[in-house]
Length: 77
Image (cartoon, rainbow, N blue to C red; front, side, top):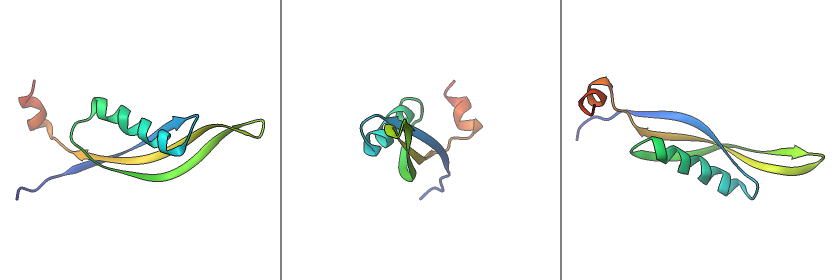
């Protein structure tokens, strides 16, 4: 089995409905610009409040994807 390297980034998704939809929004958006997503881990949940009421749910996630170095990226150009 070949050795692989994965990069991990943090994203924050938001939703006016739920934490689950906030996390899904972050993954859905990441999948539009990143390839080969592997794992998404929810690391923090919070809410935006306005006048004591929940305005939005926020989910901070860590997403990992297979890292392609400069050589691999250069071959695709």
